[in-house]
Amino acid sequence: MLVLTRKEDESIMIGDDIEVKVLDLKESQVKLGIVAPKSVAVHRREVYLAIQSENTQAASAAQIDTITDLIQR
Amino acid sequence: MQLETARFGSLEVAPDAVITFTQPILGFQDYRRFVVLPGPSDYLWWLQSTESGDLAFILMDPAVVVPDYRIEIRPAELSELAVTSIGELDVYTLVVVPEDKRKVRTNLRAPILINAKLRLAKQALLDRSDYPIQFFLAQPHQGQGQAREASNAGLNP
Image (tube, rainbow over all chains, first blue to last red; front, top):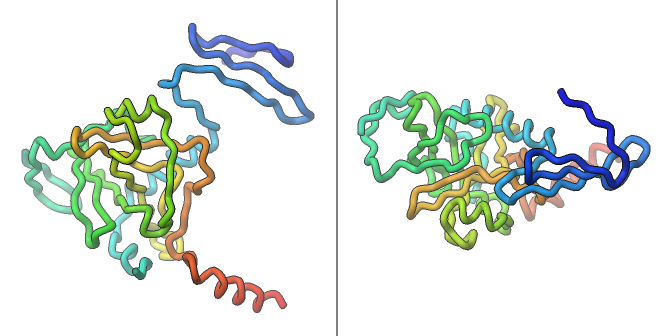
């Protein structure tokens, strides 16, 4: 892993078109600004992992009739 | 083409029924081609992989549980699916059905968008949305909330 030290208002470039800038530093939080092409998806890692985990569980869903039991329309 | 599936046995799939994911379902990078099959009711479908007979997801119409479900999609994502507005897409959500009925849930944060006409699809990750990744179907829906509050109050006098 590449490790870089940055101060507030400094940034790094990833490739030619992705910039990650340190906007604000608080005690235990850092606020990042990300400039990237619209084709690049940017997500918080925990959200990304949670969706991946949920997808994996969705792939092993078996009893579809359970859903119709739960939904009364 | 003939498809051997774990859930539906042998299926005859018309080549023009196959949809292609422009971005894979997160965690399923090797599977891009699926068919949508009808489920047991008019708001449920199966999303069956044509590349693996064992792989199928349950899709639902999220409006059944959240009538005002609205999502915002970036223009770049719309053009990826060859449309200019969300109205041109079918919006589904994936359902997780574990053993415990109370934990049956759908992912409102990462819906499956399908351009039915051109048979393109993707899973959108709504990064600016508050919709939950786990929306439990067994929770009391609108109109029943007060009843749940009342019963919770009863537990903690």
